[in-house]
Image 1 (cartoon, rainbow, N blue to C red):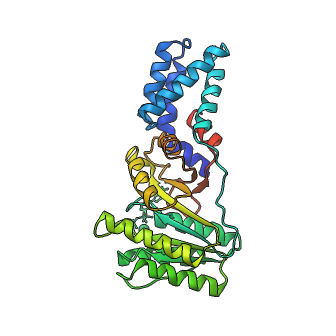
Image 2 (image 1 turned 45 degrees about the vertical axis):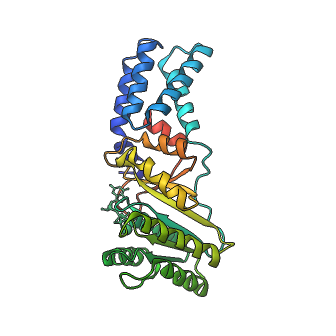
Image 3 (image 1 turned 90 degrees about the horizontal axis):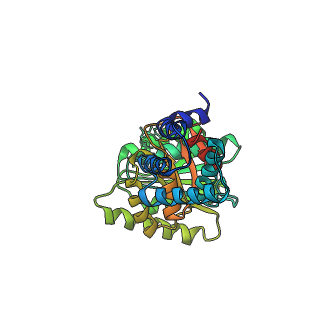
Length: 298
Ligand SMILES: Nc1nc2c(ncn2[C@@H]2O[C@H](COP(=O)(O)OP(=O)(O)OP(=O)(O)O)[C@@H](O)[C@H]2O)c(=O)[nH]1
Ligand SMILES: [Mg+2]
């Protein structure tokens, strides 16, 4: 299965439901627009945004006297794409070293995403150093070590319970000394309590600012797309602590409905940069707003 077909398979429920709305299309009337709005809400787009999208579509259909299903679908694709904002694909990590900090609550797919990124960049001939900043669980460092081995990346790892910010400090020092291209930091998704987690993250951010003031940096918040609107709440909290540069939405191959991408991008004004469509090293896609919207309406 190609990576893109994994995404299409993951989105199939939403695609089918939207397809049904268009299949029963008898004219651009209230019934059609109401049904479309309901379907968008069911797909996790969120009530407010779904209503905005449908109102915009209604206006365009009226203004341009659109009648056919294909024209209306194409107008909807444009509106959906536009809601995803200006999305320059790819990460900006051009300095040597540059750093990627991966954050998010537990279980969303942080460590797996790091494994995928490490694989991508070592395959491009880049020297990658992983930083086991999740010292909360011993198993976390173990899991990252396995990814380091698989992807031919280096790793800086310390004992369980070590201060996460000091592991990041060590990784940055090692990265500079060894002349690596990219340092990718894992972090814990869980701590003794939530304020501890945010304090630790703030400390890590301060260390990065201090030790790599001029380096390119991506701070990526990983969200599990299957958790729907709950992901939005997580994003708001993390946004207050770290200067997020992008979102990684994982598990879009699963039972996710896809609409959450629009809710996240629109409400947080943070670009979705990558999507995860499986557990394997290659299951990572650079997010492309138009491609995604076309897949949703396929
Ligand atoms: N289907 C699917 N599963 C995924 C994806 N990304 C991660 N997973 C799975 O989700 C589970 C959790 O992934 P981890 O990478 O360990 O998540 P984490 O955020 O590092 O979790 P903590 O370290 O506990 O905070 C694992 O079983 C992964 O294989 C994805 O894109 N699709
Ligand atoms: Mg992890």
